[in-house]
Each structure stands twice: as C-alpha cells, then as structure tokens.
Length: 244
Ligand code: AP5
Image (tube, helix red, strand yellow):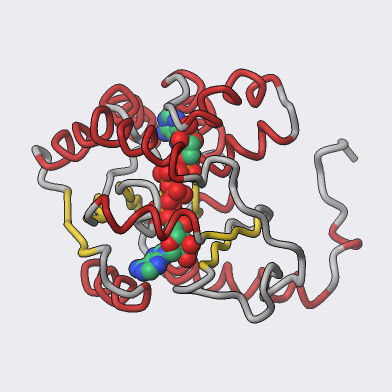
C-alpha cells in the first residue's frame, strides 16, 4: 500500500456508512460551480459551509489553504506568509496552482465553490482555462454586497475552528461554550489578519483588484447580487432561492 492510500479497515463503520449515504444522495445532484465574491467578513465562508453540504460541492477556500500552508511552513506557505500577514494578495501563479491541484480531489467531482478565488482578472481567466479543460461551466457568481462600515465589527469579533473552517462571532454567531468549537470541542482561534489595521489593507486590495472580477463576470451575465447585511439565515434563504 502506498503511503498516501487509506486503509479502509481502520475507518469506523459509522463514518464509512455516512460517507456512502452522502455519495448516494449526491449522485442525483447536478454538477455546479458557484463562485463567491465579497469583501473580507461579508459571510462567504459562513455560507459556503451550509451550501456545500446541501449541493454536494467541495469548498475551496484559498485563504484557508494558504493559512494552513503558512502554519505548516511548507515551501508555498513560506512564500505566501508575508502577503497573508499584511492582508495583501499573494501572487496569481501561487494561488492558481493551489486551486488547480485542489479541484482534482474526489470530493470535488460534483463541482466546487471557490471562496476567495478568483481575486484578480488574471485568476478569473486562468480559472476559465482550467474549467474549459474539465468541460465544466460556471453556474453563478454570488456577489456578497455589504457596506465597508459593517465589516470591522464582524472581523474583529470572529473566532474560527481552523480544521473545519467553521467560523463564529462573539455577538452574531456565538459558540455554545466561549472559545470552543461546537462540533469537535476543540479550541477556537482568532486569525492573525483579523485586526482593524490589516482589515484596511484587505479592503483596499478588494476594491483595487477584486471589484474588476465582478465586472468580468457581469459581462458574462453570471453575477447575482446578495444583500450580505442581512442575518446569516436570511442570506442562506436568499442563496437557496437563487439556486433553486
Ligand atoms: P481569505 O481567507 O479569503 O479572507 P477574506 O476574503 O478576507 O474573507 P474572510 O474569510 O475574512 O471573510 P468571509 O467573507 O469568509 O467572512 P465569514 O463568513 O467568516 O483571505 C485571506 C488572505 O489570503 C488574503 O488577504 C490574501 O493575502 C490571501 N489570499 C486568499 N485568496 C487569495 C487569492 N485568490 N489571491 C491572492 N491572495 C489570496 O464572516 C465573518 C464574521 O462575520 C464571522 O465571525 C461570522 O460569524 C460573521 N457573520 C457572517 N455572516 C454574518 C451575517 N450575515 N450577519 C452577522 N454576522 C455574520
């Protein structure tokens, strides 16, 4: 057995059964590629985790992947660290490589939700090329529209569970026990770039580099605007309406 293969005998029956049931449910779902675009703190991560399960899509959050690489000090993480810490964008080549690799995972066979990608027009063009090669089309681009003034409170109150990507908020989405993930009981952390000062650079990068991506997809007739100032539940309901 190669070092990367999994010994199924080691996996508990309940987990195997749940995975089997998930695959059976997903077999009848159409293939989808949904792109989520919005400024930091607009709720992309929060909503991705809900819709990925409902629509059997894999969630490809470039920010989460970069932070994991930085904390594991991989060669990619070492290259990305400075930009991530400062709230600037890392190079297009680096991020495109991560997404290209991640899209090949078996969990992505029914489609994917790139979250935080593409963030530049070059990344959008590269994504088009990757999808063309796979014969997959972008179904919708969901634009999380929100006023900048709301974001500082959301970002500075956020706590995350790094392993799953679940995010909480001290006021808007508190965990059952402060500082503890509801599902695993593991500790929550605050992201290093979740400060008011770094948020300013992240917002600047959004307005300067990512808003043009919204125009890129608008010209293709793919963009649906969501009012991301509503409650998380109301935003989920609006997404369901758009996707139904
Ligand atoms: P990334 O991790 O993608 O961060 P981001 O885009 O800044 O987005 P966030 O994760 O901060 O916000 P979110 O919209 O997911 O908000 P959430 O749902 O958690 O990127 C980080 C860095 O990586 C970048 O700065 C860059 O350096 C690099 N990078 C990543 N991708 C790149 C790329 N493609 N190219 C180049 N560089 C790249 O919600 C926030 C908080 O609000 C939570 O606490 C949540 O509980 C709460 N909340 C959510 N929804 C609501 C609601 N409706 N009402 C009230 N509270 C809410």
